[in-house]
Image (cartoon, rainbow, N blue to C red; front, side, top):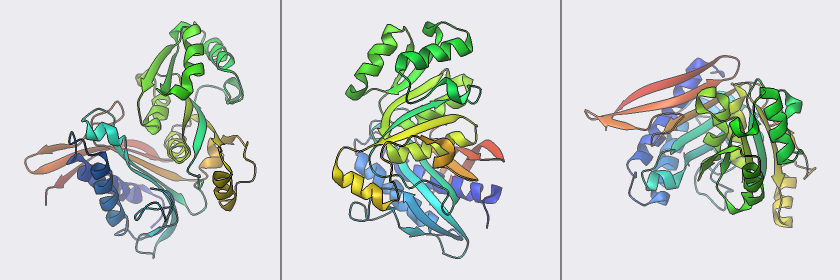
Length: 314
C-alpha cells in the first residue's frame, strides 16, 4: 500500500468510526469518556490496516497515555512505513456539551516526513495561498501584519477578519486587533479547525494567529498543505524539562521558526470527521440504524474531498 486514494479512503473510515464512538457521548458532560471511546476505536482501526505506522503526535508520552502514545507502533506491520499524527477528539468540551466543532482528526505521511512535535505551546500564524510569504510573518508585530494584509488585499483593516483562540494569553494581540478595528472570530477550542478557516474564502477568515498546542500545529500544517496555504510555527519552552524532551526529539534551536514544509514534507493525507456540526464538516447522524459521517479528506498533490460514509450500527 502507498500514500494514495485507497489509503485516504481507509483512513476516512478510521476517523469516521472514532467519531461515531465519541458521538455516543454528545451532551453527556463526560469529555474524558468521549475522548477514551474515540482513542480506543481509532487505535483498533489503525491496527487493522496493512501499514507499518508509528504515532509521532498522539495522546502524550508512554507514561502519560496507555494508547496512541508517541512512539507506539500501529498497523499490521507489513505495509508502507508511515508517521501518524492523531487527535481522536479535537474539542472534547464541544462533544461533552453538544456544541459545534467536535472533530476526529488524523494525518499521515511517509516515515520521517511528519515533524515529531513536543508537548508544548507553539506560536502560530496561518494565511491563504494567494498571500505572498513575505507579507505576513511571526516576527512582525500584529500591527505590521494587519497593515501588510490590508495593503495586499487593498481593503481597510476594518474589512479584515482574524481568527484567534479566546485565551487570556492573547490579551495583547486582541487589544491591538481591536485598536485596528479588525473583525475577530473567537474560538474557544480547536485550533486545527481555526487554522483551516484560512483555506477557503467561504469561511470569511483572512488570518489565524496566536498560541496553541505544538502537536496541533503539526496537524494544522498537514491540513493546510493540500490547500497550498502558508503556515509558520515556533515552539515555546517554559522549563528545562520541556527543553530536554525537545532535545531528545532532535530539536537544537529553541527559537527556530518553522515553515509548513519543514513540518510536513512530501505527500501527506489529512482526515477530519465531524462529531458535532461545524463550519468545516457536518457531525455524525444516526438514521435507520445507520451512522452517517462527513469527512474532509485532503491528499497533497492529488485531491481535496468531502467524503460521506454510511456505517451500520452493530
